[in-house]
Image 1 (cartoon, helix red, strand yellow):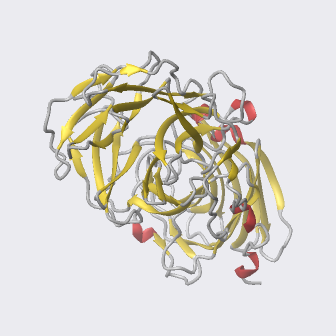
Image 2 (cartoon, rainbow, N blue to C red):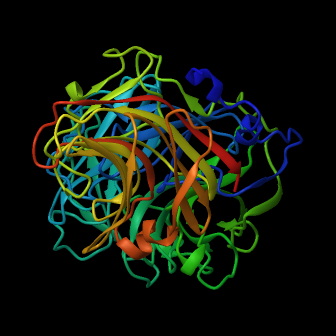
Image 3 (cartoon, helix red, strand yellow):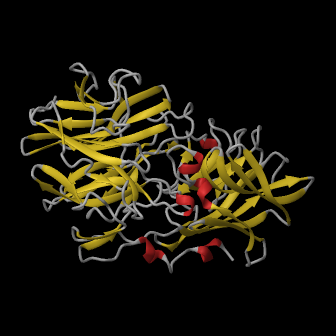
Length: 534
């Protein structure tokens, strides 16, 4: 029975929001690990980008016609020359991109965090948001979460949350720049220290009705997160804070949608205003097991200030008037590995060694070859290809063919939050016998839950997501019945437990555990099946 039997068809409708009436939607609009959204509009087309941290390619790009339904169309950073990640450790890498459009050109400006005290701010450009994008143009201003603003006189301004170094007082700083070269054309000046909360960042400037509006995030990116705003008649200030700051927060609410912040405003083509922002959805142990996600809320302007969703609080069920909804065609949830390249949902950890990945070595399979690096390593190029977990209830399944040449080689499927928090289910060989191993890494704890002798070199591996736990299962060659090995707690894949800023991935991996592997692991197919959309 070939792999085509496993193509998912019956549940594809769950990928689409089929309400066409233009009334109501669910948050998050982009579920899973898609934080720090930034948005721009060109006519009646909307484009959105997110942070990507240590994953490659970097900065996913989405397209929408209605602000509710989104489809990924590319990445901004697809070449190592744009995104060198070799020195990057977990939760470093790409922070908080801003996407803007001006006179036929798209600009994506962001921060590459190499370490806690070493970062680079740069932007890339494209005439097509799907790419290709240019090589980086660097800006000599410090801080994170940079943004760009074009004034009516053609001058371009660059904002970030520090001036020359990370030792500067945390505030929003600004320089005028030459947009062709990134060169500073003015001194870097402080604009605003915020409304009084900690960790001011995520600055964006807008101009409306004669005022320059400076919107920021404060309070940190978890439960005290908030969006605040100030305004001035002069681009250089002084800026006065909004009397009802924060304009968006969930810190005093009990909604499913929490940690709202890091927003970006957009005026739709019908004149309405909206904000995209990040959120989390806590589950077991109050932990958000899907990471930080992208949400949407309507905005009204009252007395010269923006009011978000009437109350400053966003909810999961948004019973508000929307643009006419235009969902994209449903996407297949099965990957057959018969294309020339992987789909846009797939990512590597840091820059890959391309020779260790092949879709042509054995047609109709993905071939992975392990290196010295393992999933435990905080640097280097582990052989890993993964996609985000986007739903509480899901099934991830693959068929693996792997004949290890030595005892150090293994390959399998994993749930990966970071290098020191992951669940691994893999095949390995010992004394000419094959074993299926389920292993946990939780901080300093390494635990082998099961070691199961198996026959043959072909096996089906499956992970069932149940919101508060994952079930690891397998079916040996010739068997149609899956055996459950263990159920494990999902909260350990949350950044609330492991730290950092990333969310969990389902990954296919291979490793030589200190040596380069000789054997390839062949994955015949992979399917990610949604059991419940939220």
